[in-house]
Amino acid sequence: MADVGLQRVALAADRPRSGGTAYFVAKRVGDVVIASLLLVLVSPLLLIVAIAIKLDSPGPVIFAQQRIRGRRTRTDGETTWVIEPFTLYKFRTMQVATDTSLHRDYITAYMRGDEVRLAELRPGRREGESFRPAADPRATTVGRVLRTLSLDELPQLWNVVRGDMSLVGPRPPLDYEVEMYEEQHLTRLFGPSGITGWAQVKGRCSIDFEEACRLDLEYLANRSLWLDLKIMLLTIPVVLSRKGAD
Image (cartoon, rainbow, N blue to C red; front, side):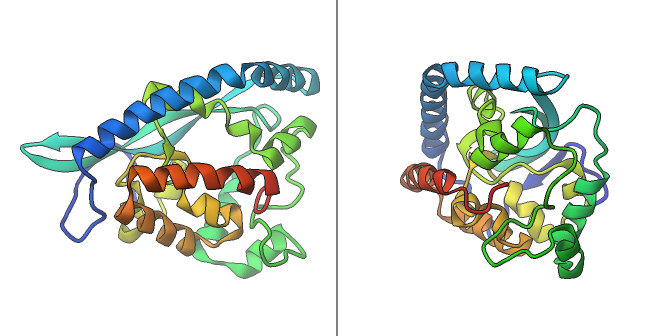
C-alpha cells in the first residue's frame, strides 16, 4: 500500500460486519464514561509518572505520535470506513529525537516473518516472549519500567475521551506499517482503534503479525458490548502478568 493518506473504503459483504448503529453509540457512551472515570481515579499515578519522567531524562512528559485509524461514516446509505491519521498520546519512554530506523527494521522483519532478523534483534528469544528488540538503546530507565507495566499507554485514555480511539479495538499502526499492508491487513482498520484488543489479551507482542491480524479480524467479525467487556476484564491479568511486554 503506497499511500497512507485519507482513504475511504466501502464495507463489502465479505468484510467484517460493521455492527449496528446502536452498538457504536453504546460503545462510544461507555468509552467516554469509563475513560473519564479512569482518568480521575489514576490522576495521582499520572502525576507520579510525569515527575519520574522529568527527573529521569530531559524532554517532554508526553510523546505525541501519528498513527492510522479507521473512522466509521455513512455515505448515501452505505457504511464506509475512512482510514486517516490521528495523534496518539503516550508517556515518553525514549530519549528525545531518537532514530526510528531500529523500529522500522523490527517492524519490517516482524511483518514479513523474517525469523533470522528477529532472532538477531532479540537473541535467545523463547516461546511466549516478546518479538521486540532486546535492550532497546533508545529507552530511558523510567521508560523501560513504564513499558513493562504498560503505564506508558495511560494518556491514551484522553484519546478515548476525545473520540480518536476506543477502549477496545485493534491497535492503531504507524504510517510506515500501513505502507507494507496487503489488502487483507488493511481490513483490520475497519473498526475503531483501541487501547487494548483481542490480539493484546491473546499474546500482545509475543504472537506473530499474521496471527495478530487474524485475531483482530476475529474480533471485528464478532464484536459486541459483551466481547468488549470481556476483553477489558482479561486485560487486567494480562497486564499484571507482563507476558509479551517489554
